[in-house]
Image (tube, rainbow, N blue to C red; front, top):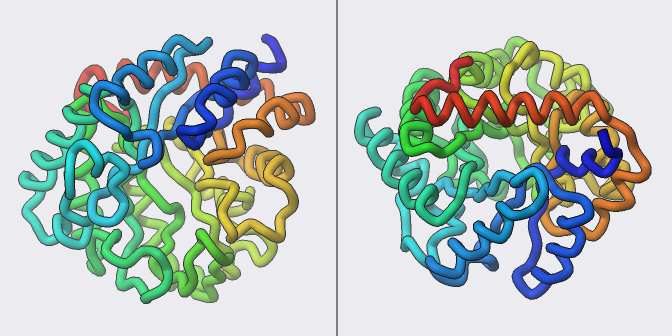
Length: 315
């Protein structure tokens, strides 16, 4: 297998003004997933055309977006405002499922395959963490029920869901987009946070690892770079993907390329580098994770079949 296919292990995006340069890179080093942002959402027909062009790239990359509702709504320009997780977390499960199914149908219609949602972090959350309005509940059972309903609605609409941020950002005190959160809770105190992901992993084809240090498990590395923590969710037939490696939380862990290496080495199956697509060639030439390519290809085939059978992402 060609070494350049290591690019399949990367999920990346681009600013709309850089689209031509991004596609030049993608044609040589095709990503496994292309992540769209609000900047790329310029109109319904324009997004459809963009997704069609992305699908022409070798390997037919999957197309993802962050669509949680509330303040994390990348499709607001074309589909308008959506309720936040805090709002629909108070609804009955059937209503949450119906809403997620509607969103999935809208996403599928324009060419999107993956929604990096729901957030199943357990509240309460503190101000300044970036999680305000994004968690479903402060109650363990409610997070599981509403998270499962959201996943079910997505999958019935043909969209792959993703539970995040493993093993739970609820106890964090800073925004990982800016700084590295450090959680000092004991293993016993963290058990409920971990347990949500262990229960829901059987229903979600993708799981996203958080940039947060959990000192009772690993004092050196955040979850997204920690073999000690990633192995706690294995075995898992889904795809473990890192949160965006460009985030400020990882500023002390070397270059983006070095973070990619650390994350894949720790056990993530795939990594997100949100806009630095121009680094893909160097990353591919520098590192070697050939076995992971086969794992990604098998995951993609199996997951597409599962989601086509509606809510069958249980493996």
